[in-house]
Amino acid sequence: MKILVLFYSMYGHVYRMAEAVADGARTVPGAEVVVKRVPETLPREVLEKMGALEAQKAFESIPVATLSDLAEADAVVFGTPTRFGNMTAQMRSFLDSTGGLWVKGALVGKVGGVFTSTGTQHGGQESTLLSFQVTLLHHGMVIAGLPYAFQGQTNNDGIVGGSPYGATTIAGTSGERSPADLDLAGARFQGKYIALLASNLAANRADMLDQLKA
Image (cartoon, rainbow, N blue to C red; front, side, top):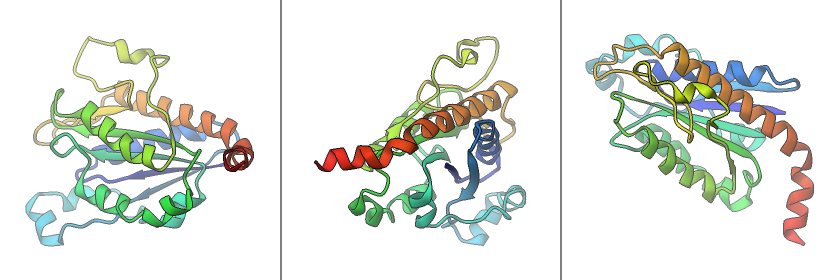
């Protein structure tokens, strides 16, 4: 059973969340967890002006994903910062290249989930997660969020992320905040939850697809 954690991160916040998601998924017996990133679309000089190059050194060794990585996975957990309440252009560009997988129904019946990061508490976390899930529904994926079985979602003691639609964190308007321990715990929970779902669905996916064709 292969779990793909696929992310885009500019300043490292989503990368840290991706690692936590992967850690959670690895606790499920039989899970082979792979972390990859989508291609960067911004020129190096633009990233340098944005102060992102130094931060990206932390994950520049992470392999860039290909479409075959999606096709081979039993579950995919996508991570993206928000841009005006939606996913980043880098993630959108990669997903826009998946038309061939859609034609083949290559992702139908596989588990999909999303996690995100915003600059502020109300900076579009839930709209990013929900709008991202539309693409997963078009691919026929079974969507898994962050259920309230993760009791950290009810924490109101400080500035923390978390949504029933997926794990989240708050980066700060200048990227000055690191993911809180509770945010990382939510990411680990979502990773484990998705891996558990995938372990139960993967073995029966072929039979399910045959029945859908009948």
